[in-house]
Length: 399
Image 1 (cartoon, helix red, strand yellow):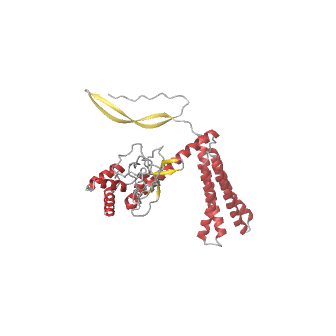
Image 2 (cartoon, rainbow, N blue to C red):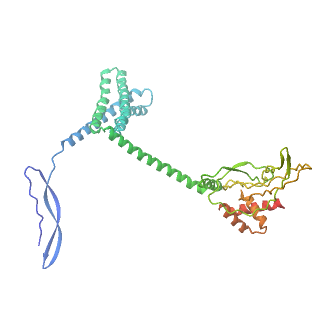
Image 3 (cartoon, one colour):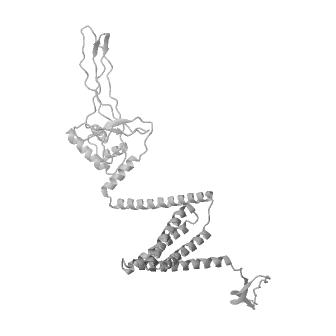
């Protein structure tokens, strides 16, 4: 059995055209179906002719023709004018530049046809280039003493330029200030995103290259930046300490890092003997003399500041100076005062911490000592090597 396709009825006044199409026909005999492809003629409505599109295509063709003739004429005229100065090939190449100049400005004007403010410089420059081209063509006619021919040849460029200028006005869509501002913002956002992506891509390539070939210096710089990026605790008072130079010289004051909200456990430090003070006679009576000012900490006690340094805590109390000689009158009885004790605090550097641990446990293993230093100051590359070096320095100095 065959199922033909129904044809739609034609509408009077509408133009139709015949097209070749295919359809599937199914034949059923004895309950068995068979399908085949059949071609047939169909009539489809034809849209009316778009005369505006045809005229626009014709105008574009005329403009292209004017441009081709203007380029050839300008190149020939300027090439003949300059052939007496430079070789012929170079002269005709220079002639092409005059016509290509205003065509280039025309292309820039086309790209900015929706933004008159940006298209204005290209439009003005294009007319200036056109004036140079016309002047060169007229100069060639004047050289041959045919001024009228030079003037006619110069007008060809004007015709081509004017044809393209009218076409641009046909395609240009003037935007209102609000729409133009919106378009400008969108362009800025997209341009900024594209520029940022380009910069990040270049920086990532450079970082990957430095990571491969940078060596020890690049790793040290990365560690320093990672240490500086640790979050600081607000509200801590600024403190200063001295730098451990590893010798007998006095340290250089450096700012200490703020102390965290949770203080590390205080290590065991050697006991400091109390400093007794004696009475001093004064005009008003007998009073006890205050202890002398504390002397500065030893030169070898301070933060171990390295290129891959750690943040330091506050400076421990320094041992008091020997008491000043007491001046006693025979008639005044001495009045004992309470002894002054040094306040223990966390060490300011790994050197002081390791010295205190070695003083408490001289036979401690290097791994255990490294574990204590890691718990106190945090982990870092080559920590075990640094601890071994500091232990050897302290034990050598003590010996």
